Image (cartoon, rainbow, N blue to C red; front, side, top):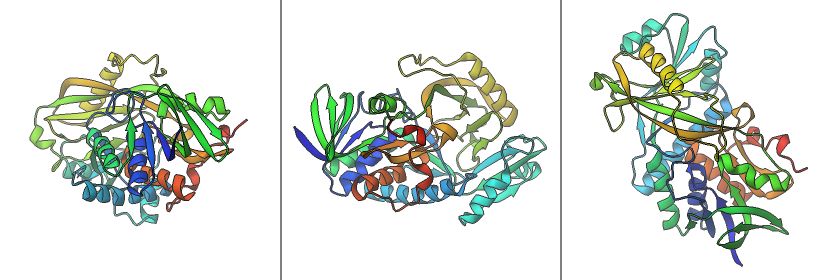
Length: 376
């Protein structure tokens, strides 16, 4: 049986980042992906994802600060430009479930420069928005866009350069603790590893259930829509920020990026389905709802051009899981609950540190495996 220091299961953003950091540190690593690399069945494809430090909890702000350093390191090491900084606004209705003060307090605690703006101040700076009264806006200049597909491809390429053995179209059927290691069982043969990193998102519990270590996941199909811009020069990344609307229904959007369209989506639409049930067909009702919202908020936003689906696997409270299993310490789980792409290089480094060092240089204490994941 082949033996490795670490095996990685799942080669989306998090798994690819973990494989990269492991291989870069000289570990003998094998990584498995059940589909083709770069597939569209999960949550790591398409072009753009938001990067930001603007969170309402300091643990995420600090991890985001680490991530920006890791992004810069990855860009320098690979020679690829992966981030475009645009600045960003978070719109927070004062009668909604979120508080701008949580954002400003967390950003202040972590020494992140920011501004708190009124609707009039937002529209004076960015007349592309229509902001109703009763909305507070948090602005951070470090917000921007990560190129999603290019990032994942870059991580995989650099992992291979550093010696990682990446095996796509190889489904992992089981991970079996065995003495001081883990046997990874695949249709193409078994391997043995000292540690296993599971970064399988919506497929995670297929591997954890036989261990009695299931993590509660709420899996759904999500979608993003690209809208025509009647004035693309006003929606460019040098004139228009990334935006987020934090309310009972949350939305987010981007400036033009690589094409004269503006991308937007609702965050968490509860279109629940398993990976096996997923249709890949956008919901006309959700598309129409999004269009109404975007046309009300963003001036000169036009008709829908196309809509793309992806998949969310949400943990309770959308909290990350970056942790060994409680009673199977050689099995490490990475879950990012639908908001982790911005942290990709940092999460990959954290998972590699957990596998090789047993602890991370970042404070990830709040991201331990939940009690429900303890082996029964």
